[in-house]
Image (cartoon, rainbow, N blue to C red; front, side, top):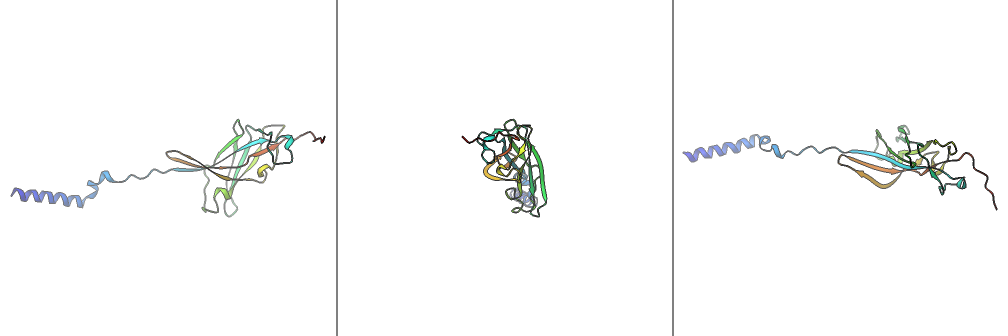
Length: 178
């Protein structure tokens, strides 16, 4: 009799575990993976081109410009502006432009390499504030992918490069040919 009660008890437990699997499997439910934020970043340098290199794209002898401004402009595959923001260089003339809010409505056609470019906006230097087209700073410097990424626990950034870009001096002494 005791053996029969034991069999019924074990059978009941097995049936209950089959009827209510969530009770027995509560610890084995996989947790939802935490989402990573993916960011698009553009970096580059802004210089003051030396008078010796005026008329060329050479940046030999150029000096970095702190507090210069550049803009990042992205257009979608319908040629509509989808992102615009101005960024300021640090004390070494370097800009790090995180494109917060940048969205791609088409994964290939709206990719940053195809849709975004960087333009010169402003130089705080009175003696070096004319726009130049070094690396297409006037018409828009294209982005380059240089295989740079930043990884964090909940963050990933793809970093593109543009430029280097340059302003030029307003007044350069005429070149003399000896």
